[in-house]
Image (cartoon, rainbow, N blue to C red; front, top):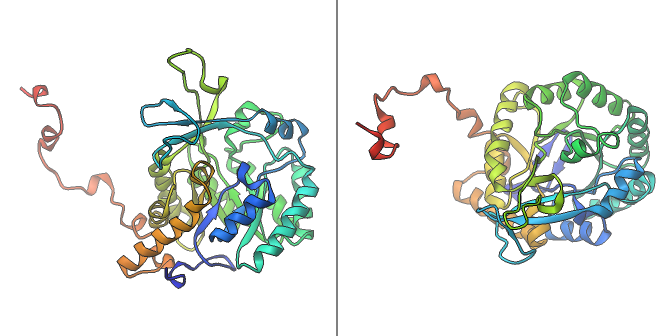
Length: 352
């Protein structure tokens, strides 16, 4: 594997590769964070926090299920492949927020020796506590802070975590954090906004160093046998099916904010080839989460090998890959006119 062709930059920071691990339950314990770094991840975003005790308690009410392409709930750990979707409900790390940030700082110091990063993730509840925690992260020397304003579970926990879909509020959050945090500030957007790109532009204009897009969608899965909701509640839903949607928002956002502003893809990437797809769409880095959660940490090293081999086959580097496809997207009205071409695609008995 050619490690040189994997290097990328986001702002002033250099990364050994574009594979980042998104925040999730497998990054609560030190063992999981260290395992991801040892497998080669350039960044591990530790499990999210805020000051809400109810959101922390929710972690003990979590549940998950694997959903196959026929929308059937399959046994955990059996028959899972990269096309399998993951549904679940979650909560925040059930530790004191400042103690958790201290632990992340220690792990980030350890990761620096491995040429990796351990990032903190905060989900806003109110501006005062957000500013306090961001200031704490700065004082601890944490190098990357992700503010997640698109957590899918917010619709079920409205008083404990916040989903932001308004540009003015995005600007307020970024500027509040930017006043007290001097490291690399990443803003993670959700999938519920009608215009992710405008939120991205607001984040850039307010001082964010990068934008992560997009969070998972909320869903509800009726179980045909019991006729009950799978897991009994609404759930967050992620999987490879979401990749083209993420790629479209990456491409559209690149047009709006310019090719000099770093975007980070998330939701739908399952392997090294999916990392390449998101990078072609405009991502400088890509967060992989669910496939590691369901298939183990070896997904990281395997994905890096796949990405490196792809780059070698194309005679290019990760940096050169960014946005190549996004910059080639054509408008509908520029396409060639082909009278009655639609007839080649419909069932034959639909034609006179």
